[in-house]
Image (cartoon, rainbow, N blue to C red; front, side, top):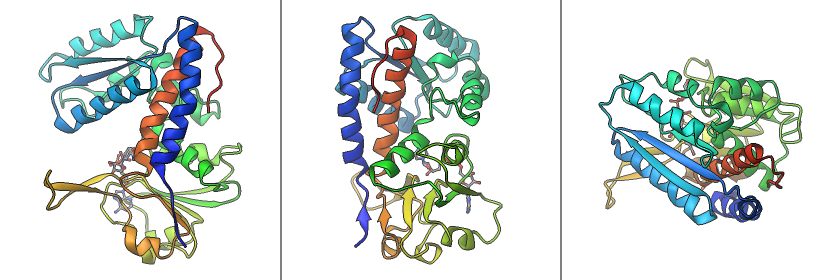
Length: 297
Ligand code: NAD
């Protein structure tokens, strides 16, 4: 029987565990505060920031949202970042990606105070992660690690193949899984758009992680018998639904579920974990800034 890994359940448990830490911090006068910044009015980005704000409210984190006009000069956005860097009530914040074309996202990231960079994308935080001393693990890779742990998947000695080498998922996840740590110690292969013989590499994986952005790219013929399959992909495809689309992963669920021993669904797999890990990083940021130790799940 193939086990369907329930990301909603794992994320919900994690959020419950975080609630204790949030209360401890709030009692000590350091209720965690998270800000989201959105430049422009992209509807998908608006949905994402709304969800993040709702998540904050649900767990007792102070949420704040700042809108910046999509046509504004980049300096206007930088002023907002400077103010957030100096604001003692905001322990962490993020600028929703993508930003408008006339803004250099890398420059935006560099202007976020590393101690408040709860996405973990600032070069200082990337460096710490690669060095094996992460301050903030990026939310999606961390969420995948937590999901594997909660599903009793041992990464030590496992052949893990990651398809996708992005800055936000593939690369940090590869780094985390090969680290000498209980939730690492894997032998990691990273595949990407220029990889030859992709199926040959994916078939030999004990744990296969797809983070590509191509609906259904991984089908049953590309998966070894009994593999554990984590589908990070979230892709909108046209469908006869109220919204006119549905969300699908990078994995062709039906054919892959026939071969996998465990598999994440889309939606309800990695997505809720990413959201939970942003809350986790915000609590960690508040704890570090307030100098108050709390137990993190
Ligand atoms: P990206 O576009 O930045 O990177 C995609 C990667 O896939 C690239 O490294 C590219 O080399 C590789 N790739 C593209 N086509 C390929 C092919 N045919 N064969 C092999 N490799 C190929 O994307 P991203 O930001 O990493 O996101 C990937 C997917 O994950 C998207 O569907 C995105 O929506 C989703 N995502 C989900 C979450 C979540 O919380 N579940 C978070 C972030 C991203």
